[in-house]
Length: 113
Length: 114
Picture (tube, rainbow over the protein chains, first blue to last red):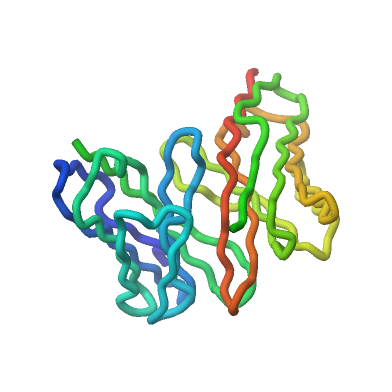
C-alpha cells in the first residue's frame, strides 16, 4: 500500500517552461489536494478536487491548472513557470465525505531559474 | 474565506518542559481541527485531531483543546523529548457541499534541547 505518490521528487525549470506534477493515491479516496509550502508561509492550498470530475480553486490558484484524470490521479500543471513558483509541492488525499485526515505525498521540490 | 493564524512561529524548550502552540480560525462553521508534524525533509503527518463537539482530546504526551466560542485551539506537548523537534501545523476544516477543505496555519518550528 503506497498511499500517495508524487512524481517527480525534484525538478529544475527555466522561466517560461511548462511541466506537470503527477499525483496518484491507492486508498480509494474521493478528495485530493495540491498545496505549496514556502518558508514561513505554511501549506497553502492551490486547488482541490472533492470528487472525480470536479475541481475548485484554493487560496493561491494563479499560474496553475489541474486535472482530476480519474479517482486515483490528480495532476498539477504549470503552463509558464515563474521564479515565484519555486516551492515544495505536496499532493494530499482524504476520504472526502465528512471531515477527515488528509494523507500527504512525499513532496516535489521545484526550482524555477 | 477561512484563515488560520498560528503562534508562535518558533519555540525553543528544554527537554522535559512543556510546549504550547496556539491557533485561531476565522470561519465559525469550521468543525475539524487536525495537527500535523513535519520532520525535516519529510511529509506532514497527522499527530492528533479534534472535532467541534469535543473540548479536549489527549493521546499520551500530546493534547489538544478547543474553544469554539473564542475560535481558538491549542496543542500541548508535555515532557518534551529531542525527537519532538519538528515543524507543527494546525489546520481548520469546513464541510461544505459534501467535501472538506483543509486550511493550514503558517507553522511552528519547535526545538527541544537536551
